[in-house]
Amino acid sequence: MNQDLQEPMAEIMPHIITAMSYLLQRVSETNDHLSQKQSISGFHGITKPSISIRSYLERIFKYANCSHSCYIVAYIYLDRFIKKQPFLLINSFSIHRFIITSVLLSAKFMDDLCYNNGYYAQVGGISKEEMNMLELDFLFGIGFQLNVTVSTFNNYCSFLHREMVRLTNMNSLSVEPSLSFRSSFETKPVMNTLEEDSLITHHNKKQLAAA
Image (cartoon, rainbow, N blue to C red; front, side, top):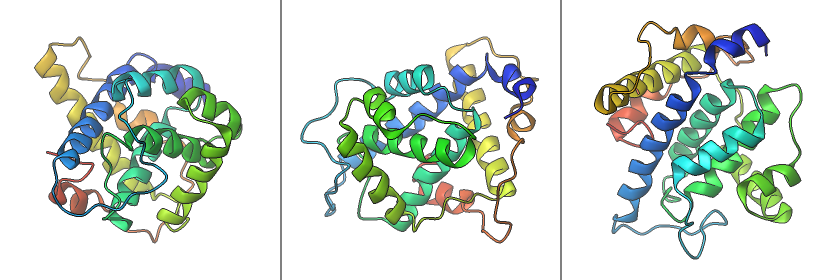
């Protein structure tokens, strides 16, 4: 990714991470209380991790050193997984493994250079063998659909930007409202233009795009 486009995002990215962690926290906590039958997968742990979702994302952001676009694409992958695997709910027992796996896949797909599975396993607090297994499970879960259309990418950017601004207003954080969030990410149209946008559908279903 162009370094000149990376630098303007340096200050705003922590707030994007906060918005993502807030949304994922809401989804996982909501699913914790659902009484419907849920399938168990390799993503589900026996106990809830002690590290918060926000701290976990901040740890990945600190050590993964992937492009900023990867986090948007990772979020898209998570939303895609939910749509394709409705009985494998993301909850507090599985969210951390879903996060590290989605970031790993997005980094491999988006970046020219990225760390290997062993490194991501260390960052995520799991074994290399488990990281390899989760990567395959996730790929099969989304039907190996890693391409993201430019319009879908921009829609998710806009959605996360709105959430960031809303949280900023709620918490009185000092973020310049004039920062061009979307344009800073529009750097790598790697994408299948035939893919349908799914943001509105997911927002209505209150999945990852929870209201």
